[in-house]
Length: 522
Image (tube, rainbow, N blue to C red; front, side, top):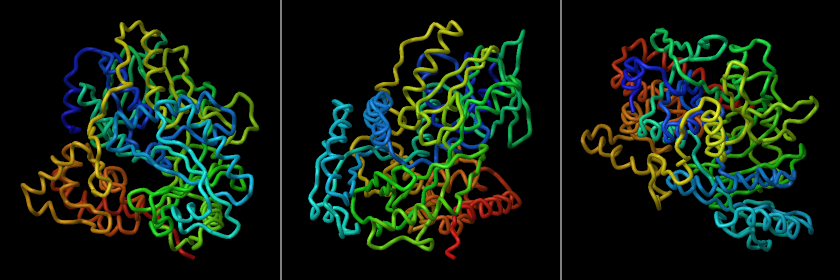
């Protein structure tokens, strides 16, 4: 999967595409797989890198949404639980069972949450990941010894899924390419093409070369997440805004804060949300917040009030309260929530379901939803595209379709487990060239062969692509990622045939980016 080869296919195609998809996050990639698997000649373009935005900044959970159940949104929970089970079957190298404990500091908490979570299990049906059950105080502390013991009555255990979001996105691009789809990153849509008032293609600019292309298609799908309104306004400057933007922040801590395999879920924070602390790549991800933003940004920044809220909330439940100096990385993501018809709703009250809109021009837009339900969202929107544009579609095949990298029974202690079936081929590079077996970071278990593999087979184009999304170095330990950036830049420059000026610019850009992920300890 190489960008040059994808560009060749784009340039050599004479006839119009069936479908052009704008956006290379979870929603766009899911729709791309759904479309090409059902017989549509499909092109996907992404203005930056795959999963650059929201889709690489989640809480790393494949879940039904316990708090949506508390809000009474049973239909969304049931759909998400069903899709959770399917995703675990289709990408077992990236999705694993995760046990959660809800610590209870009031006498009624254990029976209350046990009853609610039994309903959660029932909604999952045959795709349940395990039974919810109450734990005594001693057993709760045995599983999470770093919890505050004073006034602890016990805990309730339930099961959800945990995954690596941007690695899943890369496997989805590979799946799409394996099926014959064409995807190009760093390809920005600069305008929509129209004939007789109907959208019939896109004008795009190659961000690397500045070259422009006019690409014709029978249908265009806008799947740009928090940026869908920008594309809608290209079509109609008066279009009503579809998205309300909400920011969620996560802090990454050392594993010592929750040393075991169990995650914790704090069911009621002072702003009415839940807070998760989840083991991930030998670290712990703690979050999230829910703050309304006025506009979408490509690199959103955590606010001090969000950081303080997470630290203060976690500190009330952990024996050793985390401080700013304990934070390995902080990252912020933006949720594309379907805008309510009336104002005045808090973002945590807005539906996490998805919406699909067809403009008078024929432009199709999908927004909302969440990672867990990406496949169902894709099926819904491609069903609509098929009906709207009279495509003779085959039936959906994605319910049981194994994603690229599929591998059962991966060893999670293996630092390269997330490559799945590609691990052997990646490591073969290190066997062929011993220099590529050298570690770049022992702390983060990154070797030189991974950089070469990312360029040759995962369409990595920048130092950020590799450190932020092909590996998760930026999110796991931002300072360490800056330390290893020069080695990554040199290796990438060699593979991409770039000069020293490119290397220096890459390092400058990356260091500037990483500042947003590093907390001042004052």
